[in-house]
Length: 140
Image (tube, rainbow, N blue to C red):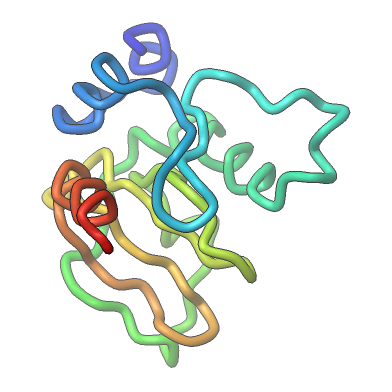
């Protein structure tokens, strides 16, 4: 985790860091499950993972280190360039049909999980990672 933070010039939000240390990296979680932070997707499986492009973009130099610029809901009518609109956030999991949950890692909303649905819901702020994950655990 510290190597990842050093490589990308960030410090992950505390609740996510705690999760990585105490629970694990990726696996069970909302939607299609949490994507691993550290374990790369083997190239031979890239065509099976819809999120490979998201992960690749998240790891371009400066992407995570740039402050996240939004503080409130961004409606679908507003054009979002995913290469610049999502800076400062990390893909957590896929919800399906090119929609994702993203963790803000840099800027005033650091620690929040945002839902990114460019076709129907826009880009919506959510709770802190811990609250987001425990809400999923508490569902009946």
